[in-house]
Length: 290
Picture 1: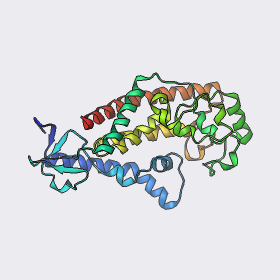
Picture 2 (picture 1 turned 60 degrees about the vertical axis):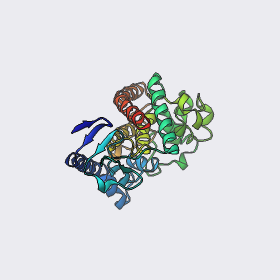
Picture 3 (picture 1 turned 90 degrees about the horizontal axis):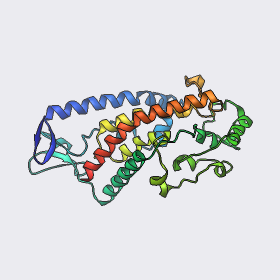
Picture 4 (picture 1 turned 135 degrees about the horizontal axis):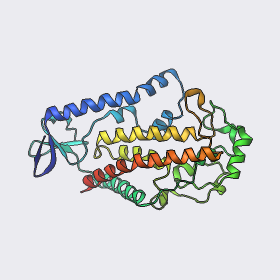
């Protein structure tokens, strides 16, 4: 590995091919279980979400890129006129983002910075999932699994607890009866003002922003974000009103003081895991725009 004046990092052919092979092997391990369940028609509330709510193909997670600021030797095979281009020096780099792409990267960067600068809120207790079935349990999204407290018990928890969801993409799935119970009314346009690091969905969204920023953000970072999103979604489902114990997800009973304490501890753990990843994402987005 060596440095040149016009590029922070240059990888030799053997170096970048080794990195690509390692990433592809890692990505295969990350999605193998999902592929098998899809073939068997078996639902999974964690991974189904990661590949449906976030509409990225398995192949997209597997696709390697070093991100911006890295030049590759002996890489003519990567030049496709879209993701990679070759310079006059013979080195291959990620293509420069055009106007629309740069605008998308800029929004992601501003969101990363806004979330990082905001204090975390730990009082939501995962009630967004409960608000998504309030008063309409018969139409619940995860119909293959029962509600732990039944329909009436689930509704009673929503009525008894204060809901303060800051995430628009969670709030928009609230049932009509639950929407007025939320202390906030987050909108798509107000994401920069509302999203905060304690939100489990904001942590999961690091995967979305990393994938939307391909190829300018490294594939390694996207895979790291996917792994963190998997951990966060697991906590999300454990704290939900559903009983997923049959597939090994022990419930976090947020309707009890002990359960709320456990949920907050998990939130704090996830904030600690997300903070360095968000910093890396911001650094790579800034490099791509710079």
